[in-house]
Image 1 (cartoon, rainbow, N blue to C red):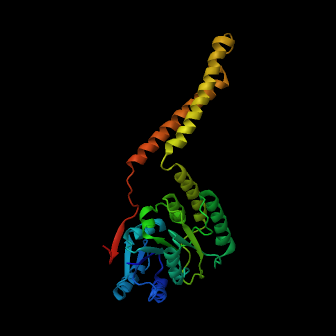
Image 2: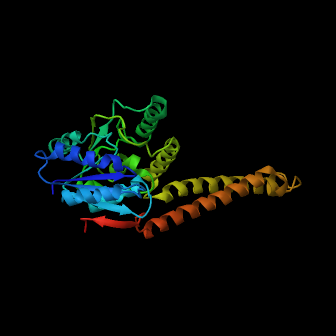
Image 3: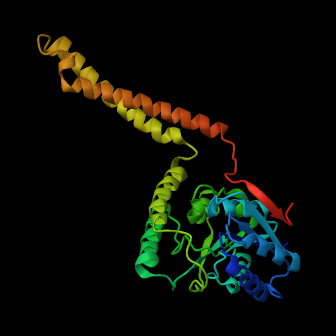
Length: 316
């Protein structure tokens, strides 16, 4: 199969039929063989019933239904696991992403050798202070922190070679940082293309303003993981050694001063340097323990998807 399109959704019943028509109109005759994988992330409306109707009319339509709302990252993780295409594309189900862009993204993967291509919503039909300005700040911070030179990390419209989505694990709320995850996995050839963005036609956004705070916290997490995720002892061991050395130097100074230089002076426990030395050595020991525990956890880690599937449709 040439292409798999993974579409996570939550309460998008109004848009699904129109989205299916738009995708098939855009891809029929352009992409030889493709599948549409709808991931229903615990919708409370009749989204799953509509997906079943679409599947009865078009055998290329497949679906997964979660028991409850687990989040977009888990939906993408499940879709990537089921995708059979040589290339994989993602898009949102709210009709704001234009499926006519997908063939162009796939062509960039084919002809220009990119591992993945991310869409860039250069002109957005969202409120400036509600989404545009926070998004610009978020993308600036992500660029500077990760070293991945993209203008729009969180665009839902992306295309990948199959080996990329097979090599990364999208958990927590890391869907914003899939380009960073791909880069950390060794796929450095990441491209970007300006894509059309539409105003929302039905419903309302499922993400509140708190997503930006969570996004920046996730950015700190992924920055740490990208640098020390495979070698936590390099961070904690370095800080542990520094703190232990600092504590030892203070203790040695206090011992020499009390035994040789000023034996009739104050007791060691009456001097502030004693508590600095004690605190430094305790912290140094704790850093070392944290490093060892991190290494042990890393060695014994087993990946377990954080979602539960209720139903599947046309998927093995």
